[in-house]
Picture (tube, rainbow, N blue to C red):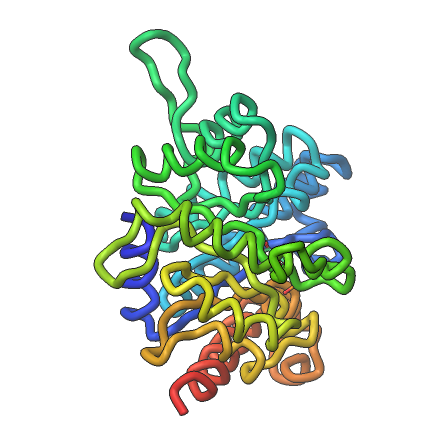
Length: 312
Ligand SMILES: O=C(O)c1cc(=O)[nH]c(=O)n1[C@@H]1O[C@H](COP(=O)(O)O)[C@@H](O)[C@H]1O
């Protein structure tokens, strides 16, 4: 079951974090881009090759200490087919290195279209009566709840069939998330609280050995007060917490999403890890050639920072 594998990996590495692989070209060291452009041209293919090199360097440097990666689809789709091939190779490489892959696509649509999204990212695509083909084959996917249960059920069915997971957007980290998510309904609860109740219900049949479900939730680090409410409201949902680091979320903020045992949440950081080699914290210690070592140092700092906050 996905959630048990995720929790086992977090426990084994004593690290409740996930590294976001959102490889904007600006973040990629010049020497990687120059090599890729020389070999493949200054075009989409060259860009995608640079992304693959960059990601592989990060994965090699992180795979023994970080349990999971979260590639966000937008940063691959913007390079078209070549970018999607880079996404596919990134997923494959991370899995080969023993990491859990959470594809961040925030997908959803009407049921029949959600089935197709689910087949591509989590399940298998039907080619002929007896041929079912896995496609991107991530371990989990972020999904959007705003179409209701018929848009979520296809993902849940594939979670059951193929041991996968989903993280449902509940309270997002961005500035305007309250514009819709904080609206008070006539039940006296906000929309994010209603979504939290649905997440609990949707995840009932996918609970594993730790009591958590493979249907998880996304709650931004930038909303610690709401995180307190949501941790109580979704006792069985594992919480993916983006917004630590570059968006200003701190270890104290994310601590609210954890339970008393130090479980219940996994905290994402993308830019602060990928761009560690350019940051004030690390740029004097690591040259651009050692970008991956700087990312490793920042990943260790983040792990220790969060562990200190949740274990006190
Ligand atoms: O689903 C997400 O991962 C997500 C939800 C959310 O509420 N806020 C949020 O920032 N994210 C993603 O988390 C990552 C945050 O990146 P950094 O701000 O660079 O650490 C990006 O990939 C975002 O798309």
